[in-house]
Image (cartoon, rainbow, N blue to C red; front, side):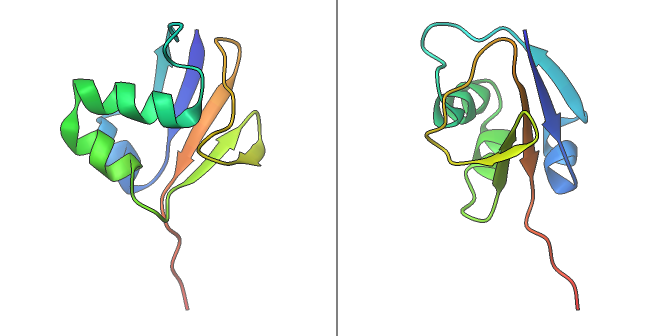
Length: 83
């Protein structure tokens, strides 16, 4: 199972900071994962689809089309602001 981490407002949208998810054959990229999560929870899917959300796979910054598998840790980071 893949370990999914949500930070900041994304954890609020997910209702938890972590989830363990079995990735099926149709979930091969981060984009596929966002789509799958959005099927179960439209608000979470919308939050994860925002342009400014960053993706981390196994502690490395990744793009939406990055390949993922059941052994991976995938983190979703919300936009960061500060001053």
